Each structure stands twice: as structure tokens, then as C-alpha cells.
Amino acid sequence: MSQTPPAPPAEEAAPTLEGPDGPLSAHAHDAVHEHPSDRQYVKIALILGVLTALEVFTYFESVHNLGDAALYVILIVLMVLKFVYVVAWFMHLKFDSVLFKRIFTAGVVLALGVYLIMLTAFRIWGV
Amino acid sequence: MSEVANPPPAVTAPAGAGHASAAHPPTNTGMSHNKVAMWLFLGSECLLFGALISVYMFAKSRLPAGEIGPLDVFDIPFTSVSSFVLLMSSLTMVLALSAITRGEERGFRVWIVATALLGGTFIAGQVYEFTVFYNLGLGYTTNIFGSAFYTLTGFHGAHVTIGIVMLMSALVANLRGRLGPRNAETVELIGLYWHFVDIVWILIFTIIYLFPQ
Image (cartoon, rainbow over all chains, first blue to last red; front, side, top):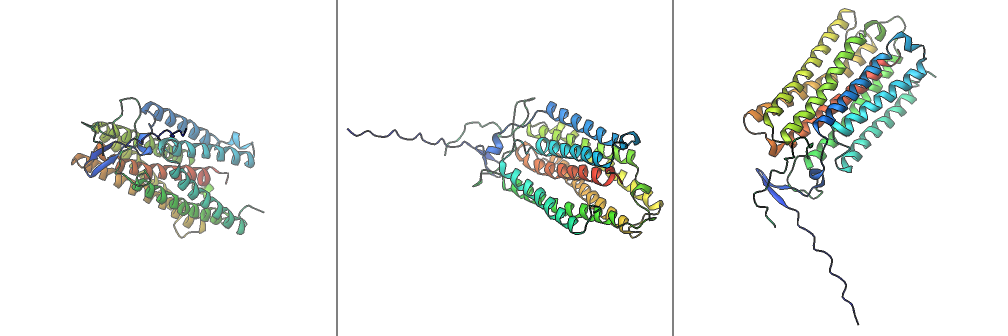
């Protein structure tokens, strides 16, 4: 006795809304994800302010006793943290399509790679 | 094609619950082509500023002893305030986008003007800084450090200025009724550009001003 395989569920048609210049896509995933609330944005800005204050603190002589290598590490970590916070939260890369993340990361990595090679070729690193 | 009776605006979200991305016409990828193009543009801008920062590092390392350099001109406390101002403009920008996405046009106008004012304050600070440096003897052609420094920070300042023009254009379009919640994506794109300018300054402030000289 042959069994009929269950029919696949019919795909739901994405609702389409009319905009001033034609239909608007409501199914697009970047239109569905919720973004942070205003309160969360303010929290991120406060974190960025604190990170900037920490960066500026390294300017003072007492911190310079740590040595240049330690200062470089501290400043790079703080800089990267600020960069990531702005890109992820304010530019919504944390919530948007992964394609945008890949495009931007490709630009950053390419720029870093090309110019690290260039600076190495010119012996910028004090060796 | 199913029609939704009395559809709510696609870009409206409950107050206080954050906001959704702006709606856009249907595309094959499901993503806004304008946004893809903006991200591609920003990716290419990374290369531009990467080149300018590299040239600055190269120039600084080749500065002959005794010539006017970073230690003679930089005023870190002043530049720190400028950096903080630009950083906070990113907050007002994202609040402007949040407001227009929720349909709060008055809030949008307030935040967009605040963003432009903070950007203008940053530019005013840069003009003041350039003037002070020039009076201290650092012109564009004084030495290799001056050329690289003015080129890098000047390019960044030009980007901020273009951003201010975009913000003001968005404000005028909104006042004329041509920019509202339905096309909030335009504000989102301006916001992406503005935040990019901010992250470039995050790099410049640390690498150019704060790294041990």
C-alpha cells in the first residue's frame, strides 16, 4: 500500500505594504529585526564616554611610567572597544544582515593587511 | 498577492521598544540596495583612511630631529573635548533615526539639529586647532609631518562637513514634507555615514594624538 508523502506546507506569502514609491518589503529580514531602545543607546554612549576618559587618562605622566609597550596595548584595546561599540550598536551591524558585516569587515581587514605590509616594507617599526 | 487591510506603517514600532530598520522596496536579496551600496562605499573608505593614517605614521617616523613635530603642537586636553563632542554626535544621530522611525518628526528635527551643531562644534575646534598650529610654525609645507597631519585631519574634516550638509538637507526635506517615517531609510544611510566618520576619528584620536610620541 503506497503512502502519499505529506504535502509540504505552502509558503506564506510575505505581506506587501504600499509605500509612496511602490510596494514596501515587509519580509526582508533587515526590516524585521528590532533595534535597541533609546535607553540602550544612551547606555552605549555612556560606555563610550568612559572609554574615552580612560584613553585620555593615559596622557598623564604618572601612567607613562608603565612604559610605551603597555601604553600601546592599553590604547589599542580601548580604541578597538570603542570602534566595535559604535559599529555594532550605532551602525546596527549587530542586528543587520550578515552581508553588511562581511562587506565592512572585508574593507577593514583589507586596509589593515595592505598597510601593515606597506609599513613593514618601509621599516616603520623602529627596527 | 495578498493585500493587508489598513496596513500599519511598516516602520512604526511601539514607543520605548526600540525601532525596526526602515522599510524599502522589494529586492532579490531581501536587502535594501541603497544600504548595500552604502556599506560598500564605507568599506572602500576604510582603504582611503587606512592609506592616510599609514602615510602619517611613515611621515612621523621620517621627521628629522629638531624640526617642529607632534610634541610641539598637540594640545591633548583640547582635542579630547573635540573627540567627546563628535562621539556624542553619534548618540544624537541614532536618536534622530529612532525618532523618525517611530514617526516622531518633532523629535527627529531636534536630534538632527543637535547632531549638526555637535558636528559644527567639532569643525570649529579643528579650524581653531589648525590656526594655533600654523601660528606655532607648522604650515602645510613646513615639513613631512605637517603635510601628512593636515592631509589626514583635513580629509576627515571634509567628511564631517559633507555629513553636516547631508544632515541639514535631511532637515530641510523633512520640513518640506518630503522626508518622513515612510522613507526613514534615507536617515539611516546618512546615519551610517555619520557614524563612520566618528569611528575614523576614534582611530585618528588614538593613533595620531595619544600614542606615545
